[in-house]
Structures are given as C-alpha cells and as structure tokens.
Length: 196
Image 1 (cartoon, rainbow, N blue to C red):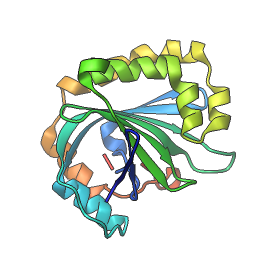
Image 2: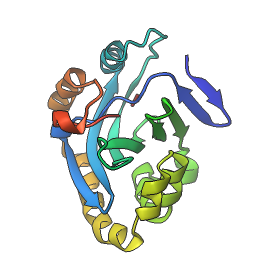
Image 3: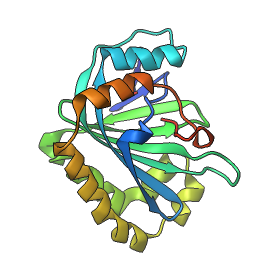
C-alpha cells in the first residue's frame, strides 16, 4: 500500500520503465529527455509489479497520456537511470522523483485547475526548474551541470515531439509493448530503467 505524506505518494515499487521503441530521446548536456505516449491499466501494472517481485496490493488504474522521462548518468562508469518523470495523463496527471540509490519512488499529483495543461506545465518546469528538481531527486551532480541555454535550445524539439504523440499514437502497439516491457531496463541491455 502506498504511503501518502503531505501531498506526496511514496511507492514501494519503482516506476514502470519507458519503452525505448516507443520513445524519442533528446540529449541536453548531461541529461536526456525521453518523450513517450503511455497507456496504464491493471494488466500493465500487474506485469510490472510481478517482475519487480512486489507482493503488495495492486491498485486499480486506467489512464493515458504523454510522459517526459528525465535520465542521467549518476556517476562516471554507471548506467543511465531515470530521476524525474512527468506523467501528463488525462485522469491523474502527476510527476515522480525517482531515486534508485535510495529505492524511492515519490509521486506528486497535479491539479489541472491550478496547474493548467499538465504537458505545458511539465515543459515549463523543465525549462525553469530542472536543476532544483534534479537535486530534489538526488542527482545533485547532474543538477550542477545543467545548462539553461542548452535547455532553451532543445526544449522546442521536445515540445514538438510531445504534442505530436499526444495526438498521433497507436494504442494497440503501445499496450502490447508496455506489457512486454514492464521490467527495469539498463543502458547496457539497449534500454533504460524507470509505476506509471
């Protein structure tokens, strides 16, 4: 059962990883942003929790939308991992602070009435708050290396890809890939690591 503390839901299971074949990757200095359209349902969540050997309660879930995954290499010689995720979902938009080092997956819900379009909000956070959010996620060294000018240069391409997949995606392909790939991924295996 997830623990809720001051608006943050803390999960005992790590997020469902993105599907590399369904994602477009953008390099921004020391980090990369993956743009992906995601479907989330009970079968996908159960497949991930089974592969994570999580024996807790599986919550009912049904949602979809664009996800922006922020990856970086925590230290030289290590695999690239996910630190932040913005799930700009239709029903329950939220974002995650992911720390594989601490085994934590903290989700913060968004209020569309207050935040507006979650995708627009997420893109603005990346543009204006990325170093602070990376530091909060435990990636202090990456936060110090983020270059605002480089973000400004690449973010229009990230936004274009995000809005494109919001309206142009194949649900059947995405769902089958999500069920098949709902397991942690590593750079060395040709994919990446990262529940929703």
